[in-house]
Length: 425
Ligand code: URA
Image 1: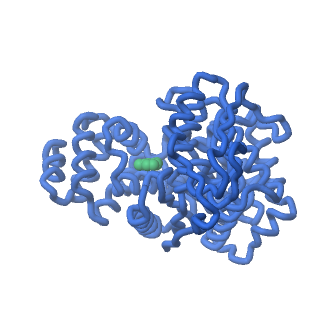
Image 2: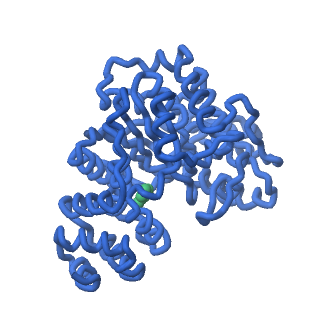
Image 3: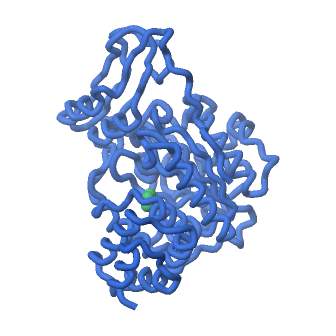
């Protein structure tokens, strides 16, 4: 077997055989296939695609490149959630403790943000003392004792994907449905969860800008999960406007705690409950009542124990940015549009996100919204507050927001958009 014949096969629109896939993933992980060869193959896959059987084999080979975790000794069924990422998507923070409070174990191996969408670990790291790195044994202990753990994925899980994702990131080959589906699912299957709920986002702030692509990605991932014995379903959800009223690390933690305290923005509460019901159902706990667990404070109790178990202080004040700038409504009427991508880029430029993996993020930076589409606004009222430690960033953030929102006459107000657009599985 050699890399050039595998590249040529896909370049010429052929199918890769099982043997070719197994060999190329293994040889790339061992360093025998060079980065430039894998880049060429990734580009050929992006341009010419892979069929379902090829994607399944590619995923299996990436799982086989590393360790598989085993949660079978836990007394509770496991359920996990994966979001394809969006602006203001802090749902993991209230969701993991809520589902744990209802009887499931939630092993949430998460990542850091890159580009305009935030990372769950960056958000939690804004809590004083909280640390993301746990050994496998420590993770099991937290899962056993608290019921939910959010931590960094260890290096042993799907190492082929780790290498390949970094390569795709710098070669313009991220946006391929077969490569995205196999990348996400190899990690989730290797993680060993029994049930998995996918939140596949569609809209300007998401990877998938249109619902057809989101649907194809979702059904590919649902098929891969179920074929590997993981009960998998997907919700397709709207990401054309930011989720909730905050985008930025500590700002999003604050909003998540509001949800756990029984308040918070309606869209965040609705999506948290929809995903919780799906996770509990898939975990074999269909009678659990997440509305009650949120209302009676059980979810908040698990949150506090979960934060403490990883060194964090749930009572410590969250960091705030040193400088603020207000963006006001240009007219009186109804807020008609608020583009998720633009808000994500603004938060990123303010310091909430990173451009390169090694960059640091500012805990207090981000965008706070004072109105969502469909709500009345008065000319001159604050529409957004921008937060940063580096005031030079205000100009770039305001630039990102140019044309991102509009105010319409009340009778021209847009119809409210549902959060959950479809369910697959
Ligand atoms: N997230 C992943 O883990 N992999 C991708 O390819 C895209 C998003």
